[in-house]
Length: 539
Ligand code: GLN
Image 1: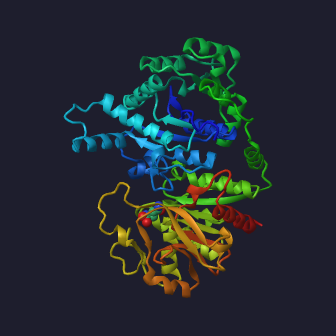
Image 2: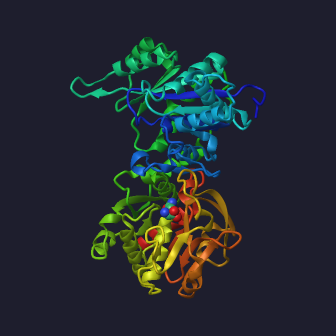
Image 3: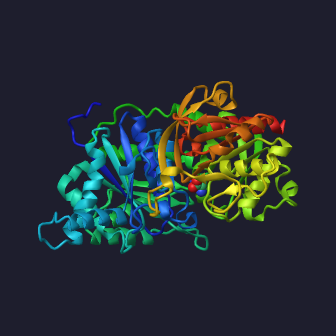
């Protein structure tokens, strides 16, 4: 690292005009370009809500909960960061207002403020700044990009913006602010409008923050005149008005930003050298294959949150990565588990080339998942069950192959006669809900001569988890005698991590979440081979 002794640079990404403009993708794309120029960069998300983390949030509220190696339950944007950068994130990469206040209040209770009145400024803002700088202080990164959740003008994100103002005041040219905004297009007059952006920048200025760069989301090209107008009214250089036009895939965005020279403008502002031309060969190769598939498969994703596709973000992306590896377009059919019964499975699932049963919690939609698995097993359709999906496969096998009537998980049926899935010992006395599951990365040993061994090509893997229940080993012998093997178990052998069915071309359930580890550079082998199996099946 060339700049070991030079200070870490901080880039802040704020949002204006509307939510859901894609701050996460812009942040990840910028980080990708900086990485491609030889800089080490990381991205952090600050979320203005009061939940300590999104682990307790219903997916309908906030989409998927992403899990890091070190067991943080985080915003799904961290998934994008990892998929783009191929560098793991950690606990420090996602901080909420709840977490900030919790730290400050705990310190107050310890007497750490020595009788002072504890206030938003300086105590809350100091804690925010400390969390931002923590990543810089690891010594691992030259650039830290901090994405501020919410939209400028929201009451709840004010302390974050104030912390940004203070950091700029302290660090000057070691900081840059990117404001991501929207230029709405009026069909009647046929023009892009700049006024909402002007107002949003004014709001930011009221808080004492002058953005350096405007990234403008737009459905039409942003012409030179509009750029000049925005520059003049918003007090930025013309070349710092960046167009971010709607793209057909998020994976286009880094190259669109490269074309707009976002990386160059940012580096100039931070007084950093350009180093090399960005090496985006691998990325372009990926995109080329993504856009020119040679075959297609149809995979059913069975879940209970499918009205909100963000609830299964990492799974959907992992399927895209795996499709690219197989030069195959993966068409995902989103199927509501509540709407599946034993009578309509043929009609709803009959044309699929692969069936994936999603993770989840609670009873809703369980029987539909079990019906889908029975169909996949009997029809020999490639099947991948993830976490609850694997647990449902265990239940299905118990009921329909082993004849254990009404076998169930004690999560849904505490009194079941056959508790084939049961709460883990370490979870039995836990009553609090937040951050208490078995979370994060754990090792798993794979047995020789199994499908899992062939898929991974190694005998020791490490995958990320998020669960309270597990396979009940009391039933293991019955399962293995009937051909359902525990092909992956944790190192002390107490916890089944992978099951596979011998009498089926491709039937695998995993207690962990392989989707969290799939990236553009490293598509996950389980997804790659699942799509391959679907492709074989389709032929
Ligand atoms: N509800 C199940 C458990 O807690 C599965 C969790 C999941 O699918 N992530 O074990």
